[in-house]
Image (cartoon, rainbow, N blue to C red; front, top):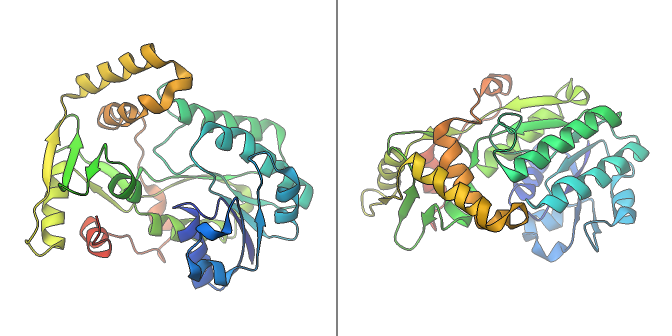
Length: 299
Protein backbone atom coordinates (compact mmCIF):
# COMPACT_ATOMS: atom_id res chain seq x y z
CA UNK A 1 0.00 0.00 0.00
CA UNK A 2 1.20 3.52 -0.84
CA UNK A 3 0.22 5.87 2.00
CA UNK A 4 0.32 9.65 1.90
CA UNK A 5 0.99 11.26 5.27
CA UNK A 6 0.05 14.93 5.15
CA UNK A 7 1.81 16.85 7.90
CA UNK A 8 4.37 14.07 8.12
CA UNK A 9 6.88 16.22 10.03
CA UNK A 10 4.60 16.50 13.08
CA UNK A 11 4.71 14.44 16.25
CA UNK A 12 1.86 12.20 15.01
CA UNK A 13 2.99 12.06 11.38
CA UNK A 14 6.44 10.70 12.20
CA UNK A 15 5.26 7.68 14.25
CA UNK A 16 2.62 6.96 11.58
CA UNK A 17 5.41 6.82 9.00
CA UNK A 18 7.53 4.51 11.13
CA UNK A 19 4.56 2.25 11.76
CA UNK A 20 3.87 2.10 8.02
CA UNK A 21 7.50 1.20 7.26
CA UNK A 22 7.43 -1.53 9.92
CA UNK A 23 4.43 -3.08 8.15
CA UNK A 24 6.06 -3.00 4.73
CA UNK A 25 4.10 -0.10 3.23
CA UNK A 26 5.39 2.72 1.04
CA UNK A 27 5.07 6.26 2.36
CA UNK A 28 4.86 9.60 0.60
CA UNK A 29 5.14 12.79 2.61
CA UNK A 30 3.45 16.17 2.32
CA UNK A 31 4.63 19.07 4.49
CA UNK A 32 6.40 22.41 4.36
CA UNK A 33 9.97 21.30 5.03
CA UNK A 34 11.48 17.85 4.55
CA UNK A 35 14.45 18.91 6.69
CA UNK A 36 12.21 18.62 9.76
CA UNK A 37 12.06 14.84 9.32
CA UNK A 38 14.37 12.45 11.18
CA UNK A 39 16.85 10.88 8.80
CA UNK A 40 15.39 7.37 9.09
CA UNK A 41 11.96 8.58 7.98
CA UNK A 42 13.38 10.80 5.26
CA UNK A 43 15.45 7.95 3.83
CA UNK A 44 12.46 5.61 3.71
CA UNK A 45 10.09 7.85 1.76
CA UNK A 46 8.78 6.95 -1.69
CA UNK A 47 8.48 10.66 -2.34
CA UNK A 48 7.88 14.06 -0.76
CA UNK A 49 5.81 17.04 -1.86
CA UNK A 50 6.51 20.48 -0.39
CA UNK A 51 3.59 22.70 0.57
CA UNK A 52 4.33 26.37 0.05
CA UNK A 53 1.29 27.41 2.11
CA UNK A 54 -1.71 25.84 3.89
CA UNK A 55 -3.65 26.39 0.65
CA UNK A 56 -1.23 24.77 -1.83
CA UNK A 57 -3.75 22.80 -3.90
CA UNK A 58 -1.20 21.96 -6.60
CA UNK A 59 1.04 20.22 -4.04
CA UNK A 60 -1.95 18.34 -2.67
CA UNK A 61 -2.92 17.17 -6.15
CA UNK A 62 0.61 15.93 -6.81
CA UNK A 63 0.79 14.24 -3.41
CA UNK A 64 -2.52 12.37 -3.67
CA UNK A 65 -1.92 11.00 -7.17
CA UNK A 66 -1.73 7.21 -7.13
CA UNK A 67 -1.91 6.70 -3.36
CA UNK A 68 -4.05 4.04 -1.69
CA UNK A 69 -4.71 5.82 1.59
CA UNK A 70 -4.20 9.21 3.22
CA UNK A 71 -3.37 10.07 6.82
CA UNK A 72 -3.92 13.74 7.56
CA UNK A 73 -1.88 14.92 10.54
CA UNK A 74 -1.82 18.65 9.89
CA UNK A 75 -0.86 21.03 12.69
CA UNK A 76 -3.38 21.75 15.44
CA UNK A 77 -4.46 25.19 14.28
CA UNK A 78 -7.91 26.12 12.94
CA UNK A 79 -6.75 26.97 9.42
CA UNK A 80 -5.16 23.56 9.00
CA UNK A 81 -7.97 21.60 10.66
CA UNK A 82 -10.72 23.15 8.57
CA UNK A 83 -9.35 24.74 5.42
CA UNK A 84 -6.23 22.74 4.57
CA UNK A 85 -7.81 19.43 5.48
CA UNK A 86 -10.89 20.27 3.37
CA UNK A 87 -8.68 21.10 0.39
CA UNK A 88 -6.85 17.81 0.92
CA UNK A 89 -10.02 15.74 0.95
CA UNK A 90 -11.11 17.42 -2.31
CA UNK A 91 -7.74 16.48 -3.81
CA UNK A 92 -8.31 12.93 -2.55
CA UNK A 93 -11.70 12.88 -4.29
CA UNK A 94 -10.11 13.96 -7.59
CA UNK A 95 -7.46 11.27 -7.19
CA UNK A 96 -10.04 8.57 -6.44
CA UNK A 97 -8.70 7.82 -2.96
CA UNK A 98 -11.25 6.08 -0.71
CA UNK A 99 -9.37 5.68 2.58
CA UNK A 100 -8.79 8.91 4.50
CA UNK A 101 -7.82 9.19 8.17
CA UNK A 102 -8.64 12.69 9.37
CA UNK A 103 -6.85 14.75 12.00
CA UNK A 104 -8.81 13.79 15.10
CA UNK A 105 -6.63 12.49 17.95
CA UNK A 106 -8.29 13.89 21.05
CA UNK A 107 -11.09 13.17 23.47
CA UNK A 108 -14.55 12.67 21.94
CA UNK A 109 -15.10 16.02 20.23
CA UNK A 110 -18.58 15.00 19.05
CA UNK A 111 -19.76 15.70 22.61
CA UNK A 112 -20.49 19.02 24.36
CA UNK A 113 -20.62 21.48 21.42
CA UNK A 114 -19.19 24.88 22.30
CA UNK A 115 -16.90 23.54 25.01
CA UNK A 116 -13.67 23.67 22.97
CA UNK A 117 -12.94 26.01 20.06
CA UNK A 118 -10.81 23.54 18.09
CA UNK A 119 -13.10 20.59 18.80
CA UNK A 120 -15.88 22.64 17.20
CA UNK A 121 -13.77 22.88 14.04
CA UNK A 122 -13.23 19.12 14.04
CA UNK A 123 -16.95 18.55 14.39
CA UNK A 124 -17.66 21.11 11.67
CA UNK A 125 -15.24 19.40 9.30
CA UNK A 126 -16.76 15.97 9.92
CA UNK A 127 -20.28 17.32 9.35
CA UNK A 128 -19.37 19.08 6.12
CA UNK A 129 -17.60 16.01 4.76
CA UNK A 130 -20.57 13.80 5.68
CA UNK A 131 -22.97 15.95 3.66
CA UNK A 132 -20.69 16.84 0.74
CA UNK A 133 -18.07 14.15 0.06
CA UNK A 134 -17.95 10.64 -1.35
CA UNK A 135 -15.14 9.87 1.10
CA UNK A 136 -15.98 8.53 4.56
CA UNK A 137 -13.07 9.46 6.84
CA UNK A 138 -11.81 7.55 9.83
CA UNK A 139 -11.73 9.59 13.05
CA UNK A 140 -9.81 8.37 16.10
CA UNK A 141 -10.41 9.31 19.73
CA UNK A 142 -7.28 8.80 21.82
CA UNK A 143 -7.75 10.98 24.92
CA UNK A 144 -4.70 13.12 25.68
CA UNK A 145 -1.56 12.51 23.63
CA UNK A 146 1.07 11.56 26.20
CA UNK A 147 3.94 12.96 24.14
CA UNK A 148 2.27 16.39 24.03
CA UNK A 149 1.57 16.50 27.76
CA UNK A 150 5.05 15.43 28.81
CA UNK A 151 7.23 16.77 25.98
CA UNK A 152 5.51 19.87 24.58
CA UNK A 153 3.36 21.46 27.29
CA UNK A 154 5.08 23.12 30.23
CA UNK A 155 1.63 24.01 31.51
CA UNK A 156 1.24 20.31 32.34
CA UNK A 157 4.75 18.94 32.88
CA UNK A 158 7.88 20.86 33.84
CA UNK A 159 10.84 18.70 32.72
CA UNK A 160 13.30 20.71 34.82
CA UNK A 161 11.56 20.32 38.17
CA UNK A 162 9.70 17.08 37.22
CA UNK A 163 6.42 18.66 38.29
CA UNK A 164 2.96 17.77 36.98
CA UNK A 165 0.34 20.55 37.27
CA UNK A 166 -3.39 19.93 37.34
CA UNK A 167 -6.78 21.10 38.57
CA UNK A 168 -9.14 18.94 40.60
CA UNK A 169 -8.57 15.76 42.60
CA UNK A 170 -5.15 14.10 42.39
CA UNK A 171 -6.84 10.72 42.05
CA UNK A 172 -8.87 11.49 38.91
CA UNK A 173 -7.54 9.57 35.87
CA UNK A 174 -6.97 11.01 32.42
CA UNK A 175 -7.00 8.83 29.29
CA UNK A 176 -3.70 8.94 27.37
CA UNK A 177 -2.36 7.47 24.16
CA UNK A 178 1.31 7.67 23.20
CA UNK A 179 2.26 8.95 19.75
CA UNK A 180 3.86 5.60 18.98
CA UNK A 181 0.64 3.77 19.84
CA UNK A 182 -1.34 6.25 17.76
CA UNK A 183 0.85 5.42 14.78
CA UNK A 184 0.17 1.73 15.26
CA UNK A 185 -3.57 2.17 15.78
CA UNK A 186 -3.82 4.38 12.69
CA UNK A 187 -2.06 1.84 10.49
CA UNK A 188 -4.29 -0.94 11.78
CA UNK A 189 -7.36 1.21 11.08
CA UNK A 190 -6.47 2.25 7.53
CA UNK A 191 -5.47 -1.28 6.50
CA UNK A 192 -8.56 -2.96 7.98
CA UNK A 193 -10.91 -4.54 5.41
CA UNK A 194 -13.64 -1.98 6.18
CA UNK A 195 -11.35 1.08 6.19
CA UNK A 196 -13.18 2.78 3.31
CA UNK A 197 -16.37 2.77 5.39
CA UNK A 198 -14.79 5.26 7.79
CA UNK A 199 -16.29 5.93 11.18
CA UNK A 200 -15.12 6.59 14.72
CA UNK A 201 -12.40 4.60 16.49
CA UNK A 202 -11.95 4.79 20.27
CA UNK A 203 -8.63 3.69 21.80
CA UNK A 204 -6.11 4.51 24.51
CA UNK A 205 -2.74 3.43 25.88
CA UNK A 206 -3.40 3.88 29.60
CA UNK A 207 -5.30 5.84 32.21
CA UNK A 208 -3.40 7.71 34.89
CA UNK A 209 -4.17 10.13 37.71
CA UNK A 210 -1.64 12.71 38.91
CA UNK A 211 -0.79 10.34 41.77
CA UNK A 212 -0.25 7.52 39.28
CA UNK A 213 2.16 9.75 37.37
CA UNK A 214 4.33 10.28 40.46
CA UNK A 215 4.46 6.54 41.18
CA UNK A 216 5.18 5.51 37.59
CA UNK A 217 7.87 8.16 37.16
CA UNK A 218 9.69 7.03 40.28
CA UNK A 219 9.49 3.39 39.18
CA UNK A 220 10.76 4.21 35.68
CA UNK A 221 13.75 6.08 37.13
CA UNK A 222 14.58 3.32 39.60
CA UNK A 223 13.53 5.43 42.56
CA UNK A 224 16.39 7.87 41.93
CA UNK A 225 14.21 10.78 40.78
CA UNK A 226 10.89 11.78 42.29
CA UNK A 227 8.18 13.66 40.44
CA UNK A 228 6.11 16.31 42.19
CA UNK A 229 2.50 17.45 41.95
CA UNK A 230 1.26 21.00 41.71
CA UNK A 231 -2.47 21.38 42.27
CA UNK A 232 -3.60 24.63 40.63
CA UNK A 233 -7.02 24.60 42.22
CA UNK A 234 -10.39 22.91 41.98
CA UNK A 235 -12.26 21.89 38.85
CA UNK A 236 -14.46 24.95 39.46
CA UNK A 237 -11.34 27.13 39.53
CA UNK A 238 -10.38 25.78 36.09
CA UNK A 239 -13.89 26.52 34.79
CA UNK A 240 -13.66 30.09 36.11
CA UNK A 241 -10.27 30.62 34.43
CA UNK A 242 -11.68 29.26 31.17
CA UNK A 243 -14.66 31.59 31.28
CA UNK A 244 -12.45 34.55 32.15
CA UNK A 245 -10.14 33.76 29.23
CA UNK A 246 -13.02 33.53 26.78
CA UNK A 247 -14.45 36.82 28.00
CA UNK A 248 -11.08 38.59 27.77
CA UNK A 249 -9.65 37.20 24.53
CA UNK A 250 -12.65 36.04 22.48
CA UNK A 251 -12.61 33.08 20.14
CA UNK A 252 -9.71 34.37 18.06
CA UNK A 253 -7.56 34.36 21.21
CA UNK A 254 -8.27 30.68 21.93
CA UNK A 255 -4.58 29.87 22.39
CA UNK A 256 -4.50 32.05 25.54
CA UNK A 257 -7.01 29.91 27.44
CA UNK A 258 -7.38 26.58 25.65
CA UNK A 259 -5.35 24.76 28.32
CA UNK A 260 -8.19 25.42 30.77
CA UNK A 261 -10.60 23.59 28.45
CA UNK A 262 -8.66 20.41 29.22
CA UNK A 263 -8.06 21.25 32.87
CA UNK A 264 -11.81 21.68 33.34
CA UNK A 265 -13.56 19.38 30.86
CA UNK A 266 -11.45 16.24 31.36
CA UNK A 267 -12.25 15.89 35.08
CA UNK A 268 -15.78 17.10 34.33
CA UNK A 269 -15.98 14.17 31.86
CA UNK A 270 -17.55 16.37 29.18
CA UNK A 271 -15.87 14.43 26.35
CA UNK A 272 -15.26 11.04 27.90
CA UNK A 273 -15.53 7.80 25.92
CA UNK A 274 -14.90 4.09 26.37
CA UNK A 275 -11.87 2.73 24.43
CA UNK A 276 -13.96 -0.08 22.97
CA UNK A 277 -11.85 -0.48 19.82
CA UNK A 278 -8.67 -1.55 21.60
CA UNK A 279 -9.93 -5.12 21.25
CA UNK A 280 -10.30 -4.65 17.47
CA UNK A 281 -6.57 -4.17 17.10
CA UNK A 282 -4.80 -6.93 19.07
CA UNK A 283 -1.60 -6.33 17.08
CA UNK A 284 -1.13 -3.04 18.95
CA UNK A 285 0.58 -3.55 22.29
CA UNK A 286 -0.58 -0.77 24.58
CA UNK A 287 2.26 1.20 26.13
CA UNK A 288 2.04 1.62 29.89
CA UNK A 289 2.80 4.90 31.64
CA UNK A 290 5.94 3.46 33.20
CA UNK A 291 7.10 2.18 29.80
CA UNK A 292 6.49 5.61 28.31
CA UNK A 293 8.71 7.22 30.94
CA UNK A 294 11.44 4.58 30.46
CA UNK A 295 11.43 5.11 26.69
CA UNK A 296 11.72 8.87 27.14
CA UNK A 297 14.58 9.51 29.55
CA UNK A 298 14.57 13.21 28.64
CA UNK A 299 11.08 13.70 30.13
